[in-house]
Amino acid sequence: MSTKAWAWTTCLVAAAALAGCGGPGASRNPRATEAIEAEIASKWQKRLDELPAEKLVLISPHNESIAKEFTWAFVIDYAIAHGRRVQLEWRDVGGGSTGIVRYLRNVYARAETAEIDIFWGGGEVEFQKLAGEGLLTPLKLTALTREAIPATFGGLEMRDPNDLWCGSAVSGFGFIYNRPLLKRAGVAPPKTWDDIAKPECFDLICLADPMQSGSAAAAYEMIVQSEPTWPAGWAKLLAVLGNAKRFVDSAGAAANGPALGEAPIATCIDFYGALRVAEAPDILVYVSPKGQTAFSPDPIGILKNPPHPELAQAFVDFVLSVKGQALWALNVGEPDGPVRNPLGRQPLRKDVYDLYAGSGKLSPWTVNPYESGNEMKIDAELRKVRFGVLRNLVRAAAIDNRQYLQAARARLIETNFEPAGLAEFNRLPDNVATREGVFEVAKQLRDRTQAAKITTGWQSFFRDKYLKVSR
Image 1 (spheres, rainbow, N blue to C red):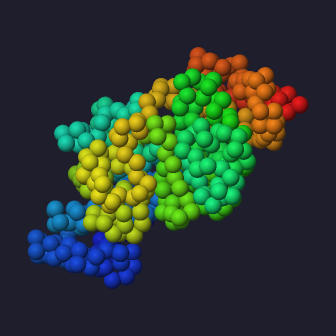
Image 2 (image 1 turned 45 degrees about the vertical axis):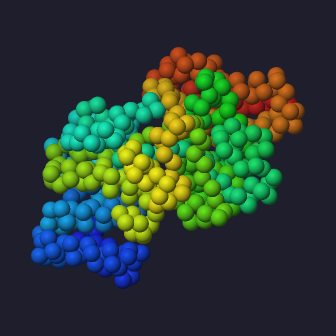
Image 3 (image 1 turned 90 degrees about the vertical axis):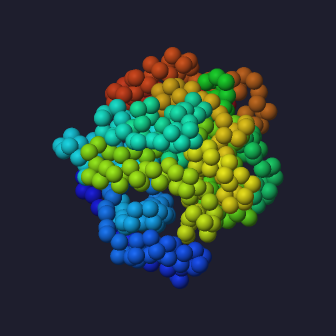
């Protein structure tokens, strides 16, 4: 696989982040930037662009805003502390974290090093795979970092037991809605998954195909696990799916629905919701259902045989520090905050929330996962096993049979959810009606021939029962 790299030299960083006279760094207070320049000059008797250079190579699915903001912040912090300037090179191999893992496996199959220092971003599942395959180098976590970042939270690992990776932020799931569109539809602002499953939200929700979007699949799992049993969770999720106005290919496109006025509501990861609310705070609202969404880690790790191991550890230290963690959630222009764009992510360190509590400096959509009532404990083992099953099941139930699903849902609403019709509507295929069945089918889906047979059977099952309910 071919690769390309994009980097910001320290001179560009100096011009953008420190000049304070136009360009990306213009939002910084000129006095603050002058103070930074003066501090570097006083300590090292050189300007930033005159300091000796070092290089760090990273690979990440993170967007350009995150890469730029952390580049600027780390370059300045490292220069003041060590008297050296860093050029960060961000490798781009296309695709998200799954594609990056595939690329790294291919490289390490042929060589002892990928010539890349750090892999950053994506779900913990990808990092667990790399850790199990011996492709990560142990991190050196301080006692303070261990105290501030829990080993587990809500049933999920926040850092590897052997320190092979550590969460750098957490992601929650919820929904975004358009105030004027909801008001026009006569629907009260939703606060929980149950609210968007109500008949009042019929034909109002924009959803993503879970076969195309991992974050959409994760959001659907949160809906399911918000109920005490698998059948009850599936019934709630099916009600939400039945309220869909449209299905799109990506979670980002779904979150654009309320922003563009195409649908009043969309489920999404908190990151997508926060960024869109930042663009239209008077129109859009993001909701993280209290106690109904687990917070999963966005990890960082040092790859096997990194070309710059000490600098890689220094970058990890910065990302996990109070300053690095606060960068995720501080408002633009705050000291230690983003220069140009809000990042809209949730810090993982507990002490960051304590430090900024009540200050008004954190973005208004920031949710403290550790606040009483916000933690949702989930069955992590079931989540991991059911991931592929749920994606295929949603595809068969709601996307391949969308018109039949919508007709059956409309009929249920017309009949005030007549019990026999509702029971038929919510009925699961026999092979996944129980937890044991889910585990068995998850194994069978690994075989392409078996998977095709199972999913084809599900398509027929849902079409037939929807037709029965509609009639």
